[in-house]
Length: 137
Image (cartoon, rainbow, N blue to C red; front, side):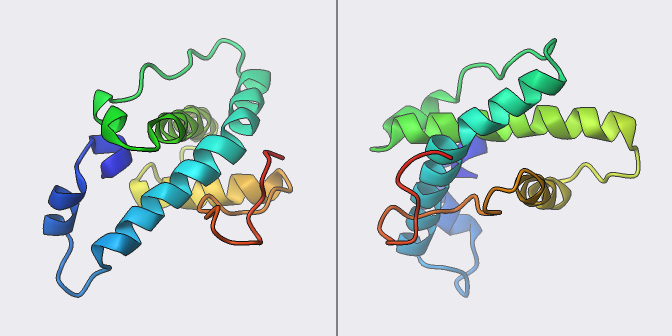
């Protein structure tokens, strides 16, 4: 919701039930997705899609709402990672129409794609953890 719809944390927290994660957890999820997808995996995804489908047009500009964040650059890159993945997913769906094009199906597809590339199947990484890579693969 933060990355793709430009919703602020206040609106996101209003959407989440009181039994859901707290604001700091949601903020950490956004930060860790920004680091993992934006910093570590964007170039891998872009190169893969362009190798298979060189005629693909890259994603447009990231939503302006992402500029408000202290990690705007990583979040904009995360947005582009997600968009390049959607391009890959759409091409794959055209070949195999049994694929379900939904939010839940797409996220699973991304994880499966990472595994097939022999990359750690993680999109969420936190630079605070010792096990997190410090450079893109």
